[in-house]
Image (cartoon, rainbow, N blue to C red; front, side):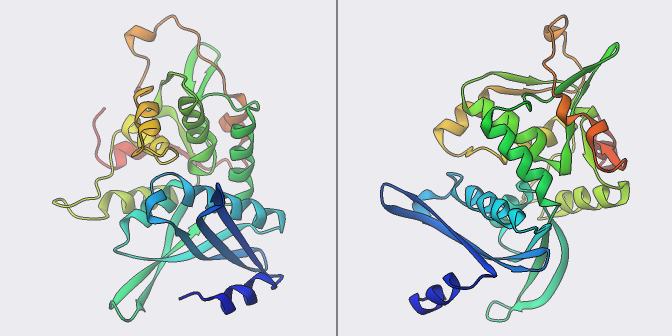
Length: 285
């Protein structure tokens, strides 16, 4: 456990970054990373129990990621107990994937740890900054030539979901069409492995239950950017509609563009559509 002496020692070290979330002179949570070369190890994220599900942990993660990126860190890693479903869901929504397992990492509980790795941080940090500043990233739909196609989720999630989440929290009603054409960057084998793990995690009786349909996967991803257990988040989720294809009631409407998230802007040509992922998971849509 942390004590005052340990914190004082941490705060003077140049290879450490610590952030504190506070409101009205009250500490809501804190988090810190250890920087080693171009990697950062997430040492701790702690949030006051009364503030959980309010987005404090997510804000701390992105604050640390932003600072780490400024120090030329490319990726972030951490260990999480396999039974800690809330933490695993949080990090998954922030773009972390399971990269390995440490057997018996928690000896007192006799439990393994899952090793999580972030996707490249810089594109995600830029996307978050653009979304919050109201920049050119505006909505998750792209109209191209004679057909409407959904835009890209660069790095897997924030490019699209953070923009939709932010605008819904600000009171806008949003309809995302052609969810099956949303593109996830990465090789087919890697992306399939990530979503297969999400689908198979947990049990049939107790969950957690990960969806298979592209519209449900996309909405679940957007939900990860919203404090959906709070009233503000509940209302925001009601304002978001996600569709496979173009529903009849939206025909003839003009789709708002998200040109910066088009797949031509990806750093890698390797990508997979949500429709392909859903078919791999056995969905019918």
